Length: 383
Ligand SMILES: Cc1cc2nc3c(=O)[nH]c(=O)nc-3n(C[C@H](O)[C@H](O)[C@H](O)COP(=O)(O)OP(=O)(O)OC[C@H]3O[C@@H](n4cnc5c(N)ncnc54)[C@H](O)[C@@H]3O)c2cc1C
Image (cartoon, rainbow, N blue to C red):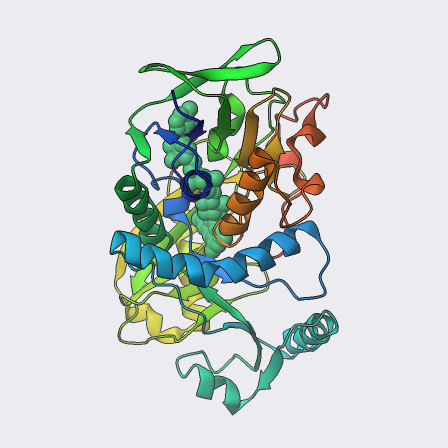
């Protein structure tokens, strides 16, 4: 018998397990595969900031997370011996012609009005910042932002929990939340039943598939195709991101992550010729020298998208049932804040950000839209 069972060992489940454990609960984490091998593996790990005066729910969660990240990373280094390679060296948003440069001027003004410290860089100054960018880049917005190696982050979280005594169960698929009356009593898995008064559904793109989890949350997988180049011969210094896609994320180890496509194709994890052609063309358009860069890895992952683009965090219909899922294209950036909010809701403490906009019950009594292709594609690439 545990105090709480977390379903799913992605970044969200691992962080929820950590925060619950830090709050004094005896926690079991159930992962059907190995932890950190799904969306949290596939991610580019971009950490974008929310402007200080942006009052939207997603922005408040992201700001809280941005505050928590440095302390979390330092603690994980200590507890696990793994450095998640968190860096905060800014994001560059390039304009490829005068029309795009005009749009950037408007974007910079808009961001400044919302309190963000950002600037427009033009002409040769752009190449002083990033010498390998194409001559066709006429201007760029420099904005605060960072990145983290999401794979190392998950590994660090896993090891830290292991050392701290959290019960980590791998290769164990959850199938059904057990109940008595209106409250949770435990979890049925393919490896047997486990008792706990609190269950947290953090199963990412698969969160809507568990029996007894009400409301049935309409989380749909959106495939992202993504690849890595060896850019050690033409290194970028900071994350470069077009207003939508693609983006280039230079890792400490000399890899350049180039992402990502966005398509609803169910759970088809194919890496396609069209996806690869598009990613490579866009990358070489931004940094011509990448034409000679070796392709070192290609992969895909499923963003756990929710219909309204907001994560699903909070209580379900049963006493003791909680959700932390639906983070879509931005799940690494708001992950620490998500776990903090989730634990405040479980423990009944004061909330670090308003919880109402994220409530799972917003989907109660709503027919589940099974055709995720009709959903609003979440705007922008401000992950
Ligand atoms: C290509 C791509 C690029 C991205 N780039 C960024 C980015 O730059 N910045 C950013 O912030 N976000 C990004 N994201 C989004 C981010 O990766 C996700 O939102 C986040 O990782 C979701 O984490 P999660 O823990 O909810 O899901 P996952 O990492 O998918 O974890 C869910 C876990 O639940 C397990 N599970 C499922 N069903 C069961 C079951 N029945 N029993 C037991 N275990 C189960 C799965 O095996 C999995 O390990 C990107 C995503 C993709 C695909």
